[in-house]
Length: 126
Image (cartoon, rainbow, N blue to C red; front, top):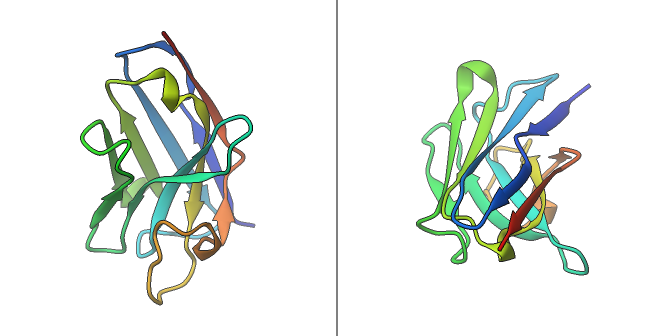
């Protein structure tokens, strides 16, 4: 059974940093696209960052570009999201997702992802 488990969320002051981890089990995703999305209260789930297939190309939402960095450790089947210069508007539940297909990678589209984690809360205080 495939599982994605996020960790690393928490409470941080504005300007601080957090590193989220997403550990996959049940199959390897080293050749698949993986992404991070977030959902704030009363808002839709939105794209944050993604990392492409074996080549590792990265993609970011404009709101986090220059502050967040996505990376992967294929040996550990884990994807990370390093979040720096956090702002109160970054407060949300952050979800990891994996695209099981090898077709065109629509990295910012929720429906492109086949597996989702349970989410980890990130709260940024002002």
